[in-house]
Length: 390
Image 1 (cartoon, rainbow, N blue to C red):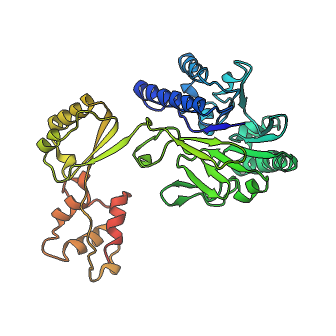
Image 2: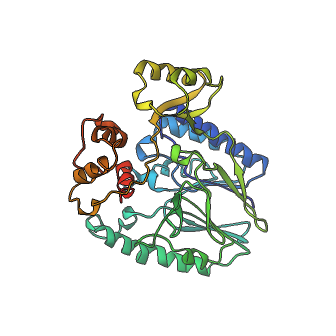
Image 3: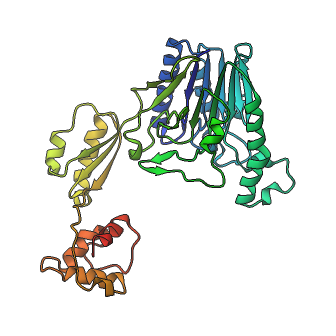
């Protein structure tokens, strides 16, 4: 059997244009699976951005998309976003049984394929509603919920899954796995309710493939996240988007979806606003961020012209972001004696003739428009500046 695994579709995120783009990407994935003779389509959670995005319109359109699939089985896992807005009812449940080959997995389960020679272990998103059979479950604290899910649902299921024998074993999950990277170098630490890599490895599976984190990655040998079907924001601009082809006896193959939405940043810090208009290409696809040294001060009429030009070229939307200069390290005598942020800034401002108070305020706090020093702020930019004052 061939398994096609895709995750984090997030239908309903953004406007109607974004929904149309997401559906087109999904259709492209299904066509790719048909070309490769995939038998089982598995959607590893977060079909929807939130529960409210399930409507008759989206249901019919997604039903149309999965109707293109030529394989034998279609399986939806419930993800955390499928519950947002209604913690007791997964938005994908209406797809269960719409035909003889479509199933929704709402609780841990084990499916056998190919006359039992192949086994798929499913672990959907586990949350408080899983404990509905327990009296007064709604009053449980977060730590109590975690404990009862682990001890009462997850661990017993993992014990059962370990005992299941087959020539080929695959685990598909929607969960947080310790050590996974959310973005950049940020990794999930050991907490009350993450699945440990050793727990997954103990299942004896050939591969463990998950949804939930949008960054495609391999955590440990045989444990991987397929990544999201679509990029969700500028922070995911470099994420490869696609689906995973799993076939017994072969290495997993990642199939990239070239039509996935682009999030492009255009750095125009060395151009004036007229220069930006001159170099916009005839065709632009995706979301656009304009970085400019004076973006915050570009007149609204100029921003409108630039935005209109990008939209006319096909961009979904346009945002403007100022380009800040790098902050040089300044060594200030007596800075350790300062008792407030104002004192620290004043000491720095007086450290050199060019660092007058008004100029420094404009450099550090664009929103303050050079009116003076704020008493405090939590902005990352300010924190970075403070680290450079020694």
